[in-house]
Figure 1 (cartoon, rainbow, N blue to C red):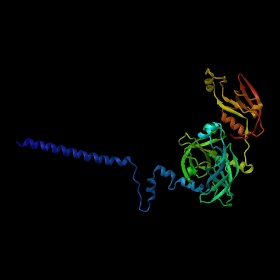
Figure 2 (figure 1 turned 120 degrees about the vertical axis):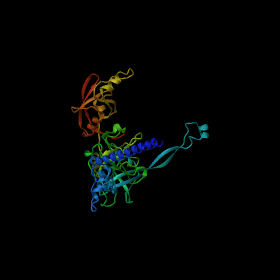
Figure 3 (figure 1 turned 30 degrees about the horizontal axis):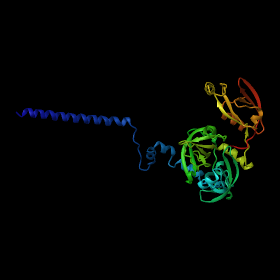
Figure 4 (figure 1 turned 135 degrees about the vertical axis):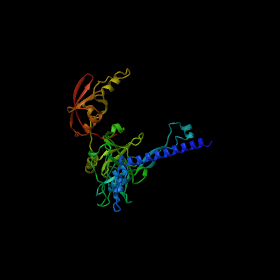
Length: 405
């Protein structure tokens, strides 16, 4: 009666043995295949471990190297970056009794007794030394209208700064400090060599946090001040995602080699991770004029303008409430002519479309602005405009822009 049970037990044992044997065969086969598919392990001798260290580096570490390029860049320029503190006293008239109900009841809402009151405003910005004699380059809005300018170096020394020149149109200023002739100088690069995707390192004193460094890339080039929303400037900015905050203004934007390629100058309040810098090539030219003359003369025509395209004109013309029909062409639409300006004297009218200047086609407001900026004071420009269905040729003599605003 026990034979059937023994037979079943033998069959089960045989099945297990076969399964184990098959597993061993498969494992051995796998071990024989794997080495041929993988990279051979590095053979390192006892006296040479550098090869193993290199092979274990991540791609990011291999690109940066054992010492961060950011550290090297900041060390190259860091001592030349300064903090700029400003003080400005303003006088305003305060209505002493206008909020008092007693006086309102007896003397009426029009009664007021004005008393002068002084208020001291403090500002903070950044800058960097461009000459051993103590010339500091910064933004115009950092030091504009300041009664007192204090420049503090990274080593803690402070000096009174004297503003040598301000140019509101390009938002640049030069400040002089008397600290001997052995000051650290920031190495200036060239913004013409900058490409989108290059490293961007911002150095300055954002929000009062001294000697702060942020890292990003160049997001785009030649972003016009009009596109940024700063219509009273004439600039093509470098755009970066390196963090720029209040207090960074006037500080340097560096490339990966530690050379200054721009001056951090503006942020949009509605932007996240977008900042703007003045190209250093532009700043070099303006700084030289500010050192020499204390100001920069900018030619102007005196028009408020808008880039016109056929689609934009068509959209306007199909609107039954539009007060004017616009030629459906490419050009620059004149929205307003400033009274007593060169454009007004030459006969430019609101609604004109500027097509050419000196025979060169003009297709955008930025192009027109740059053309005028590059012209000479008093230069006569031949301007072709379309007025309705007719074209006219007008001569406009440029004049000096007196007020950036």
